[in-house]
Image (tube, rainbow, N blue to C red; front, side, top):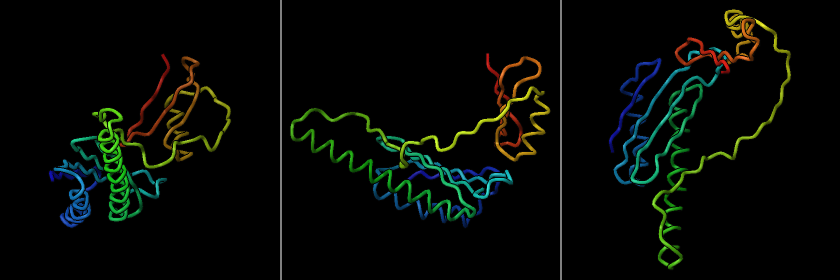
Length: 180
């Protein structure tokens, strides 16, 4: 197994690296020579309680498996990530067996690609919110964003009159989305 660990906003200690490698080694038994890239991060946004993030990408002979988990503890995030990846591997392997059985019965050739379906159910809109959009400058929008503590802010540009979106980037800076 090729294993690579990256750290974003944190220095990855040998203890965390070996813990993650030990946990992800469980997947090696079920996959043929996977290449695993693990990214560990600490979100610096104070409004996010689950700020320890573990993200993994696994390249296999079949599909690429991805998962992202966050919690208030890095080891818990790694544990949750491994559980999610194990479920994906199990689904991937069972889909492959079902396709091979179907092809063996003569119901058609096996497909080359096997899509991996997300673990969770399809996302749905659970809340709708309406608010007045006041004209303001992007600098005023930054101040409002900081006051409300969200990751994004929708406002009407005082210069163009168009609706813009201001968002907080992972590196701590801001991004501005303007319509064309």
